[in-house]
Length: 487
Image (cartoon, rainbow, N blue to C red; front, side):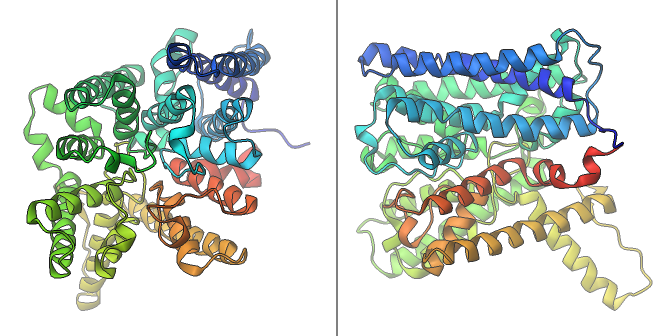
């Protein structure tokens, strides 16, 4: 008889408490729902109650047993299962309010929110009730730092170690900045909340009301893309708002551990970090290339407007945020090409950004360079160094494997979407956008369009891609290996 290698009671127990946190989060949209009296209060109460019931049942299944410490497999299983449950239960308000009546529409919008993708199936965003608008952006904020990270701060209270959850929550970059995991989680959330409060205040100074300021802050800090207006950030036509958002989106795309070091007095850490320097360098180069292309085609009358639009869109895409100020699908083909290449870059490790991440591209280029050198010096042992330290070969192998899986998934999902009669540009950009958590694409899913017209099967495939992109494959794919569940 096969013996299972995971502690299901422990997994149920941990998942249960995380689902209860989701249930509590579902009560927050009651504030705008009641203030604006938009009729969504009861659906959110029902959603919260149903979610709390599921969480309570899971806790009951594991309660009263010697749970012990979560092992690697327990952590992997918990992360994969709980994110799937959060995505499904997060769709309840969409269904109950009738805002998104279709099953896959609700699932798509929920996964897009929690994965910080920002792709939407909504045609008229401004017609949505305020409670739903708030919930959409709140799912970004919760998914950005991660509900699991929040749970890590309180797990020790229940006598459970969160080490394995920490290692398997991809958004953390697996870097402990404090001796204990719970301390690390609290520190990350404190930094996250501090930036959130500051950005919301600055947007209010720029003329946005408290509701729009908070919603767009949630999206920006999580590098999501949901906005309250059909024209996204372009609705405000405000250079001030665009500059402020550009700065904070960039901040959110850099490893949060560096901010902790800066707060401790080591400001040089922000400038010494190789990945952050490469990230900023890519932004500058890409923005200059787009600006030059726009200038050559006389797209804007003012050079200042040209540079402003170029920098905003470059930062928005490379950070996988997906805010727009203009329909850049009408820009010169070269400008569109630069932005599409950025779909595959992403932000820094340990940030709220999605995508491949700059650190992997750095390691890939170093690996290729080493291979070329080894052809010249076959007997030489050439280590790959990053920040003055040798990179273990296991890390290089994992990097090559991750990138190979990434592009294979893009290829397979592109073919699957093309089989549904989507044109190749739409299929490719939608797949790359979903997997990289970017939120916008080209063709029929361009900046001025949405994903609502896609077939239900396409929405299902893209929802799964967003899910995989958020968990960075390994935490999810390993669950499908039979030996994972065996002793």
